Length: 262
Image (tube, rainbow, N blue to C red):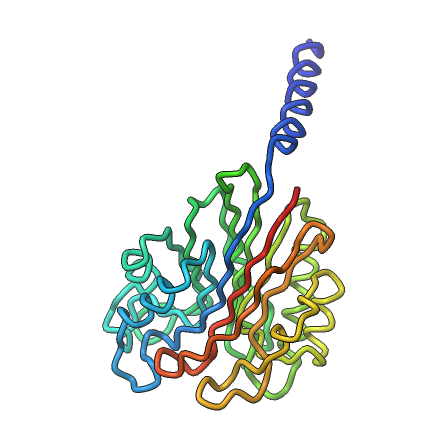
């Protein structure tokens, strides 16, 4: 009775490394975009402008923050779906909390279909705003399974929630066998405790552009929007830009081109 199970296990064990061995180098364009619940800085709710920003840079994966889902202030639109339609990308929403007749949280846009998804609720103090991390896996045309994490950490001056949230993300992601990109509005500068905790597991590109200020978009002063990755020996950053589209949103858009070698 045990022999068929042993054979199946052996076949499964042989297939997984073979699939990985067939994977090839991938070049991925990654974007982090705080969309200010679709409002723009003039509060005129211009989704075509937001989509135009994304389309102009043709990213493979986009992390969206401050995303509304059918709230009154967003005219009851499902913002990720609307932006997905306008950019011809797959879209996904993760609720952090119920708000204004709808929901509020994180979004992801992807040139690839989703293999696996998770809405990971982040810890917070009882009186603080709930936050979430949207964790997705995609498989590229070159055969690589990439884990992409889009998040938005707490914004309060007191860093208690951000530290809790950074610790939770490290604990959730530290043992993952997948190459992982963690990106978003982390509301903390590289010297802050929450970022230092994340850098125990992830890497921030060691290039000047990665340390340019990202907020506010009309006069950037602090570097709080980040693109990080694990397995640094397998990634090469060939381009990193801070794009201050100061009409679309109050944050600068962060864009990186990463080459992954399996």
